[in-house]
Image (cartoon, rainbow, N blue to C red; front, top):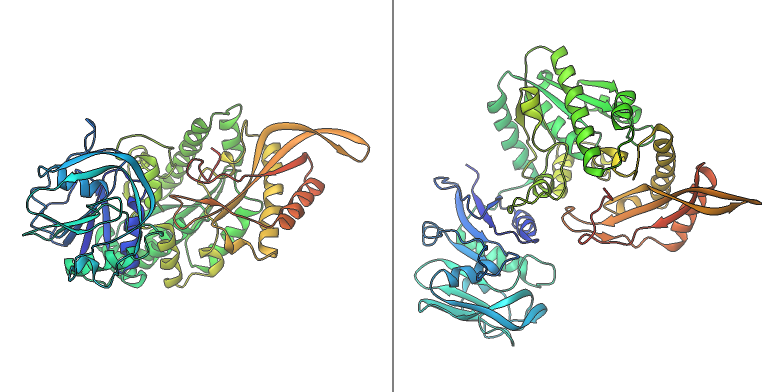
Length: 506
């Protein structure tokens, strides 16, 4: 039985980062909504309460009953989690006179405290809160402070419940990983989670879950669906049929190149040319969400048809990973954007769903792929959206505009590889804007399209910074696109980070 830590999500932007840090310490963990604790699961060895955008004093803040958790499991409250533990036990949390955001340094660390084992006085931590704990209940003991916050960390006497006002999961908390490791020691949880152990346990679970059933899987050419295919192939072999659809929104020559790659993996792949079908369905559509839904429905229809050509298909495999699920539906019920591979498909196709990667972050998927023996160029490919260039082409989708975007994107990606920059960025691509501008080519005035270049650095797509590519390189890309791609006379570079922008433009 795989021991694990449960992270209760109160809506913080860094909840996923807590999960990544725990996984990096070779400990398995799962993130669940604040009110969905898996009672009765004997593999749970400890609980972490995340931060939140709310104040505990807000009428609509999340206030679960923790009485069945405290005292039974070691608990670590972070930021809002720390404030809620105090608040729900009769303490006081009040608005600070000044919001504390940024670097601070711990002082008055209580000696011999297991949570701070190996962490020295003055260590840097990262604060992000507008409230402060102004009164602790009697059985709560302060174990660390900062210059501005008397209760930077505390322990509840008589139980293994700990809390910190700062964020140990973020990079700027110098000893944050050490603190989380200390908490895992308190939990006495196994440190045996790794890509190899994930593969062994997942293949065993898939064999048990699927038995002799047959599975159909959507391949996109990306890392997620490719790793999913290899895992399923290892578990059920010939009972897996993969479908790779050319919806006319792939990168230049992508359909042929990807099919060639899959031959080397020994996968049973059916290639479907559906370009005309998708172009017809998308004609005249400019709304981004409507595009996604049309493309998603197109996939469903194609897979449904292919599944009916095969006998006894009972399961639909998908390469869904954690960020897909998080962005599709937050715990507050607010949809950021829909993902074509999250939800809805099994109902339409009358198939059960199997998603072996749904609890992995992108970097973990890559580590699993390498452990499976997959080739580097398949694993290190940049993420590519399911709707493809359909959401990198702003405005109406036509074959002519797609060709312009494919050619511009091909120049950009090729030059990134040639200049040794491809592996330095998380994701890159060209975007065709619904903007024409005046230019001069030779002695003639032109009125042609604008291409925006996007490149970001990230580890899990939850946050991303724009990649600081060399000016000389960007100048070369711009020059080659304008000279070689008919219909483009202007190239711009996107220097927006996520948040507030998203990685894709639509």
